[in-house]
Length: 169
Image (cartoon, rainbow, N blue to C red; front, side, top):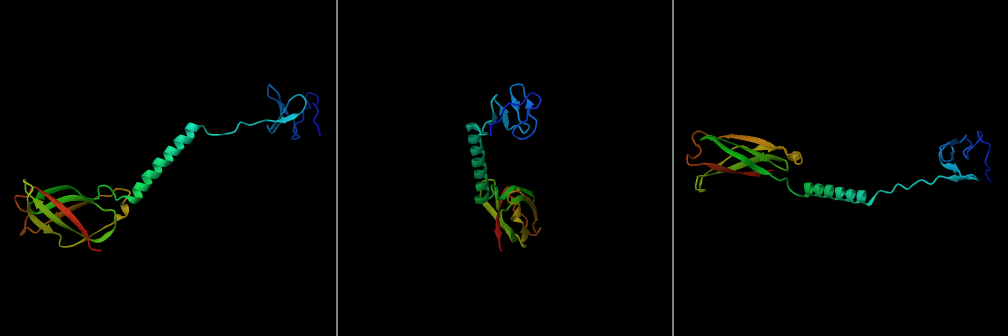
């Protein structure tokens, strides 16, 4: 059924509501049609297509995120093990330890070296301890302080040590 131009002031749009003049044409109340002088025509809406740059940037962000997640899930925690070793006295040492998996019975073997790099002594833990490895992605560090028997002190020629961890689970 063709629409004819109604009298000014009584312009009714195809939605059955009074239309409004937007400065260029009469537009239906719902904003979906305009009057071209002979009939109501649908208003063409521009498509919302993202630009090529937005698409490329999106792909790059997803690829980087996927790479980081893949590495975090498949590679061991970087820095796992012993760091920041220090000989405090002839009967005490300290160090930091990080582990990626849980261990209920963790012990250490301590190898002491002189200034020439020669191994001068080996001492071991007498009891194990528990370490929670669930902090893998949060970088939890355990600070360990070890006191040795004064009757079996650290060699006076020792200037550094290495601590090798063993999980007995």
